[in-house]
Image 1: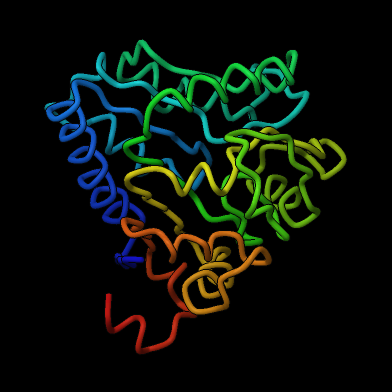
Image 2: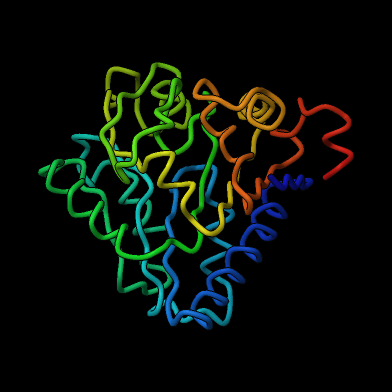
Length: 250
């Protein structure tokens, strides 16, 4: 796993966008299209802003999948991830081919449809975050590292739900859904490239666990270390607890 640390969120986002845009252009050049998966959250704002401003991408040749979404939350809610996906990526680029996770609809049918669609061809690159509880997508600890289902319904733990309150999407934890649709860990690992963006001091403990701790379900994002092409972008705040040896190597 390649770890990169930057002085601030803007420079981090710019560097991550450079890698992401290069991967998208390469996929379109080599295979005629790019298949991507995008996370949407407060931590992704700078990165997605820079990515959607990148030049030389024919977004009409990009097929975008959604990483995760709450169960039972309407798209009009400020915390809806598909609302964010549309606002932060799709509407800015004119992507024509995209797949939303409708957690407010017929969830079994949504999961079946997305499982079929995403399994039809390899994914070129996935944009990820790392949760305050070290979750990957909405795979909270202890995460299921074994299921082969591309998307599944998961239970959200209290730490995850409190994070959403802390990010001001919900007034209190009682309003945060207890379940979500999430891409599975094994499906994430199938992508050609993985790019995780995780700024801010509130992510520091999770980053340390994932970069330096044991690889296992209790720190789900630690699984990124098993992927041959995973890069984690941090700012100085989220990297603050990493050991000197690790920080000196990035």
